[in-house]
Image 1 (cartoon, rainbow, N blue to C red):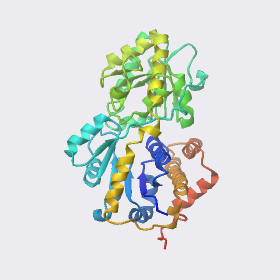
Image 2 (image 1 turned 90 degrees about the vertical axis):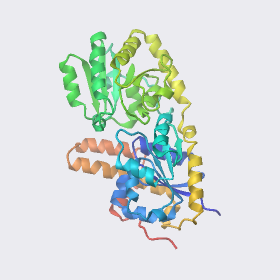
Image 3 (image 1 turned 30 degrees about the vertical axis):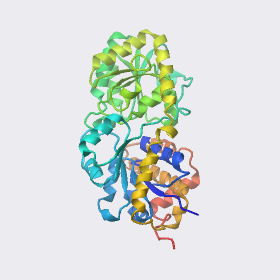
Image 4 (image 1 turned 90 degrees about the horizontal axis):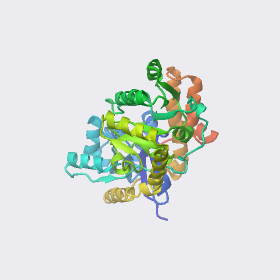
Length: 416
């Protein structure tokens, strides 16, 4: 029986959007290829896994440019062909440059980023658009008790979801614009309430309340709670200056929440102004404020836009969004097979799903335990975060993850 081609997938983390993309890739193409899913945290802890896998796979897909650094010490002639997914560029980095120098193919999420990279590479490397998808079965409108998110009754609710620290990347989330828009909207909409979803918003919450603006913050929020949070909002606001997706716009639209966003990432391709959302140029506070106020003044329009938004993204299921990857993978495999077949590799490569479950558990442990030890999060919050990362994994997967981190399992002796 012929062996399926083997592909190594490397996400930066297993549990957030890029990890989710990796899992969706496996679901979509697992019938055709064997995937070996190893997050960056695990490869940093277990470099032996990478050394064992590289000679045994047909291709490597770095799902973020940060993963390319793992191959800096490898003999480049001995490496299988690499594809690198570049989601966005705030500042051109050494990792971006290395990705261009060492990749046989690049993947991006939007036409704009393809044009950006085509110009930078002068057409030397094929750049394939693989758009974001959304799980519209999971992200859909819910009936919500708004008190759950600290929302007083009778309010017009404006929200933003993200980690406060995301703006540290050269202000790419536009939080200065976000807060400016909130203040201007509050001056025109007395019944405004603002929800800041995600960790790190304590200072902004205090400052907004000191200005007399009704607001609340969720702190850490589990992925399973996101549909309810989107559904509690009347308008989702995004003020980013640079984005690859952004995934939150897809998720909000899937939950029938009207979106007002800057024209970043896929937004120009996704939103038709006044039909399924509103968009504005980057840093255009006036346009953002006007759209939000218009939606507050017309509940009927807001509801209609929310429904059209869901119709738009419901057609963007991951299964169809990922289709362009098949051609990328087949081309990489052809390149690899011209120089010979991969080596057999360790015996545990015969069960890619077992590796996936264990590596996801290991990644969760490697992300949570250091935060608890350094007291950046409390043990209780760390436990909730661990449960969210583990999602529906079993206690056996967690045990395998512990053993994997310790090097007691998935040992790298080659099979015979």
